[in-house]
Structures are given as structure tokens and as C-alpha cells.
View 1 (cartoon, rainbow, N blue to C red):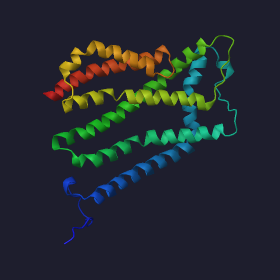
View 2 (view 1 turned 180 degrees about the horizontal axis):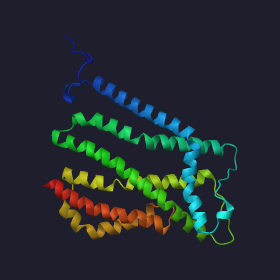
View 3 (view 1 turned 90 degrees about the vertical axis):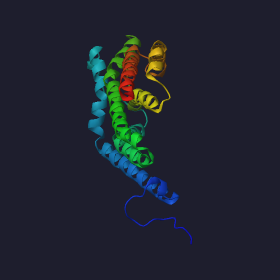
View 4 (view 1 turned 180 degrees about the vertical axis):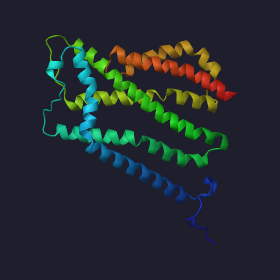
Length: 255
């Protein structure tokens, strides 16, 4: 008899018993949920564009107020007919991606969890939740430090230069900061995962502490797109704290 490649609808079988088509069908279902979530949040961001842009503009207004340029106004200027519309589309895409990130990570977790061992499965959900919270925390730090970065950048340009920002350049720098900070804040998750996997040890991390701090400072100085000292310190200090925290958490999980 020919073995069937599809299984009747019912309870989900174990990963070892699933056929190739069942794995592909489940992957397709997970991807559809992620895409629908991204599109739905992107559409919501598109219609909420004006209040969202107003919130994203706040660091610019605060920077001008601190520099005594508040009388100039903190409006953006476009110099091409399509720039305003493309800016709205870009904000909608970024908003859809960021807001759908918990759904994407949850679907990823649901897809890979059945293939994990019991002792690995119990860490999957905490790691997913921690990844979302750390990314959101890194993005929040980038947003709040952006006004300081703008003050430094505008103030360094000289007294005879007046700032006129386009929304695309302003939001591109802010988006880059949020993405870099959010990704960098996943640092402790990676370290703890490597500790649990046995790739590194807490004693090794302690012995490597001085070099790690130096490398973190160099990394923060190189990766920060605004090149201002406030953003560099805002990235380097938490990463050093995360490094120390990963040593403590790794020791506790080891016990």
C-alpha cells in the first residue's frame, strides 16, 4: 500500500510523525497569520499617521526648544511631490512590522516548540516574551535619547545655519536608532541562550569582562548612526549592565 502524505483533520500529531506536506502546510498557515497581522497593523498605522507623526516629531520640538530655536517652528518640509506620500507609506510599513512583532514571534514559537525537548520548551515562551520586551525597551530608549542627539547635531552645525528637515531624513535616522537599539538590547537573550546551550560559561564571561566592556564601547561608537556621545552612552551603558545581568541569570539557571 502507498503511504498517504496527508493526515485527516484532527489533533495535531507529534513532529516526528508529521509528513513533509504537513510541515509545509503548518508553515504556510503561520506565515499567513504573520502577513495578515502585518497588513492589518500597517493599515491601522496608515489611518493613524497624523497623531503618530506628531508623536515622532516631539524629539525635534524638544531639541529646538532646548536650543532656543522654538520660534522657528518644528515643521517638516518636502521638496518633491511624492515625498510626503512615500513617508506615510514608510511609517505605515514600520508601524505594521513593529506592532506585529509579538504575533510574528509567537507564531515562530508555536512552530518550533513541538520540535524542542521538554527542558528546552519551557524556556521558549519566556525567551519570546523577553525578546519583545527588550526590543520595545531599546526602541523607547532610542526615542527618548533622540532629542539629545538632535541638540548635539544641530548645535554643532554652527550659529549661521538654520535647520530645515525633511520627514524622510528625520524619520530615517530615528528609525535606524530604534532598530539598532532594539536589536542591540537582545544581547542578554543571546548570552543566556548560549549559556544554556553550553557554548559559553559564566566563569568565561567573568574572565572576559574587561575585554567585553571595551568591545561594547567600540561597538556602540561604531554602530550609532547619529555619532553623538549621548546615543553612544545610552547604548553602551545598558549593554554593560546586560552583560553583568547575563552572568547572574546564567549562574541561577545553572543551579
